[in-house]
Image 1 (cartoon, rainbow, N blue to C red):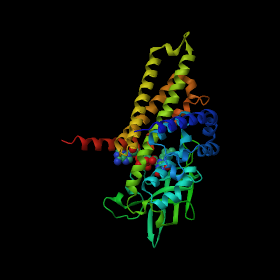
Image 2 (cartoon, rainbow, N blue to C red):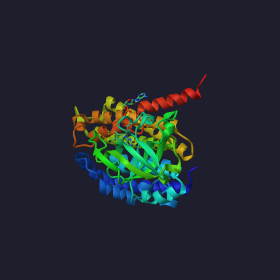
Image 3 (cartoon, rainbow, N blue to C red):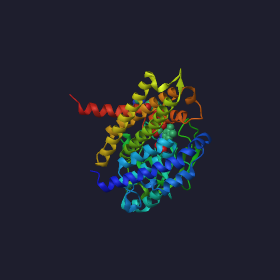
Length: 385
Ligand SMILES: Cc1cc2nc3c(=O)[nH]c(=O)nc-3n(C[C@H](O)[C@H](O)[C@H](O)COP(=O)(O)OP(=O)(O)OC[C@H]3O[C@@H](n4cnc5c(N)ncnc54)[C@H](O)[C@@H]3O)c2cc1C
């Protein structure tokens, strides 16, 4: 149950974020996107607004807002420029993991600096050998007294170059059955033996670093095992990925909403054969379908977020929301481009950027093929005859 005070905090935060998007993000988005340059100033401004610590409890210096508010903030930011959610997105999975599974010492050590954005980070899961097949990971942490020695590499890691601390998943046992029970979560800070490798050049989601992380005889204390437990990493990361999927769904809604608003405005300005194109039924049908899809995606995402706020595991609801919101985002951004005609294909307008940013949401935080597998597995269990 959301209290009056929580609703007031939500409304104030959303108002501040909307102003930030309008005044600072939108004017800079096109240039950062074109140059693929990291938005350092905008990231610092988000730190000042407390967005790096949105879900971190207040006692550790965070805003302590609920997942529903967190999702609404992601939607607002993405309406301006989806990439600006990058510095705080996987960072929030790290803070979620520490808040939920960290020991008291780990929370006291890491959360205050992560909440203010003094330290920034993300999630290091995907490897060159694959992101979907998590249990097949090859990064290995060999125990050596009170330390572990880690070797291996990760790829496509958001904030890989600019981040300091990562929720790192590595195998501590290569022979468990099932294999995912050999995966352990570490709170790993860059240092000798842990460096960023190359940056990837991307279709969309530009400006945010997506990098390799390389571990070469990287020594980490056993105090930095998340929750000081071996073999719990898969479970910990799956929980964090639920908030990740809600955040990706919210990003998709933000991008789709921005594309829709651009399209409905343009349709009333653009005239052909002496009339605005908005008077044509084929354009109206597109607009109606776009708005309906966005509305449905938003309701699904808010439902998953509210359930998460009640403390439920929401792999089914978060998976459905992420699947639907990301698919409709691609459809809506393409329809927005259709409505703009040739102008939509040009870099003068943001519509082509919305279209390029959309597919990441289909791939990230578990591909939509995998969401379907998880959803179907749950359904078959629930409706077993
Ligand atoms: C811009 C960007 C940022 C990212 N940021 C991060 C990050 O911060 N941290 C991180 O850890 N990862 C990150 N990723 C990685 C992302 O999570 C993975 O790319 C994604 O999980 C897919 O893994 P993959 O690329 O290895 O594809 P694969 O696992 O090789 O999959 C290839 C195709 O096969 C399909 N497939 C695979 N297995 C099955 C199956 N069993 N059944 C049906 N279909 C299957 C997939 O759905 C996909 O269509 C990022 C990716 C991108 C593009």
